[in-house]
Length: 197
Image 1 (cartoon, one colour):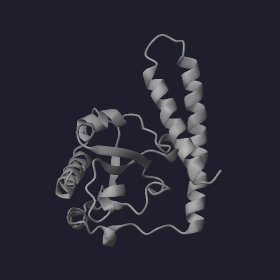
Image 2 (cartoon, helix red, strand yellow; image 1 turned 180 degrees about the horizontal axis):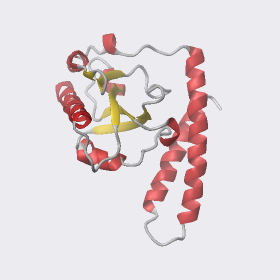
Image 3 (cartoon, rainbow, N blue to C red; image 1 turned 30 degrees about the vertical axis):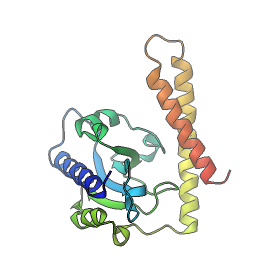
Image 4 (cartoon, rainbow, N blue to C red; image 1 turned 60 degrees about the horizontal axis):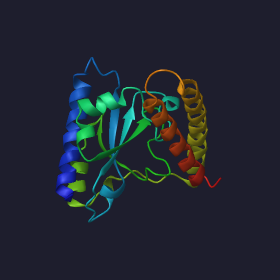
């Protein structure tokens, strides 16, 4: 899609986040605290098919492992039209750094504390996001962060495996449990590869 169109989608989502922060939806308990632009849209001249965003939610890191979907994420995505637009959401805990091996120097476009970052959105539309990108972590911080996330993902994978095993032959749909197991496996394997293990 054209860069201007992608920037428009981002701005619309940022405004929706701001509106929900000002007037929380009583039906959706999930609270998004920050929205970050990630990946291809940060590159000059790129016209991404999908807009990758990181969404920091008001939950502890153990409840939002890498590639995980916190409780209420699908409902929030439907409520905000995130699921109907060309977004690839990456859910993150607001209580930990947003960056990792995949989220490299993201651009904040909205936060509950600072509001909408209009200058950053304008820069994204113009293909000049560099001044708004977060600083890269040091090698020591990067390795420590990978180790923390890998431990969280290992625990999430173990829990998802036990959950799947318990539900495998039980009545009801298996799909939500299989999806959880898939996301947990994918996150763990990605972090394992990134950490060089």
